[in-house]
Image (tube, rainbow, N blue to C red):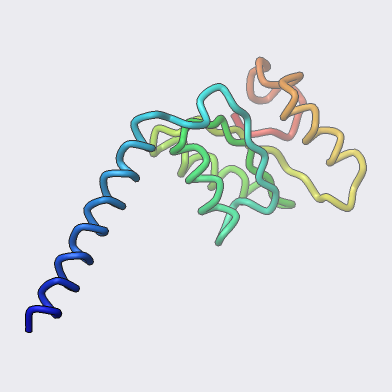
Length: 121
């Protein structure tokens, strides 16, 4: 009986440690002033990764082959108060890859939506 209570006490202590450690990380904003690119990031695990990177302070660039998927993901994440930009990119197309790299490097970040690019603000 005494062994069981010692074992349970250790589990409770380790759970509190994990909780305290994760809340410290959230306050530190470990990815502030960083840009993260996540391809295929408008759904599923890619979307979850993009969300987490943004929650940790990064500006996230999401991409998908379909504009409506990019628009939906950007709207959702921006609705959560996260810093995110999106662009259409089929990684098999050189022009799409070049636009994606330009977006990430900041060449198009200051332009207004609707100025000829296929990027969501």
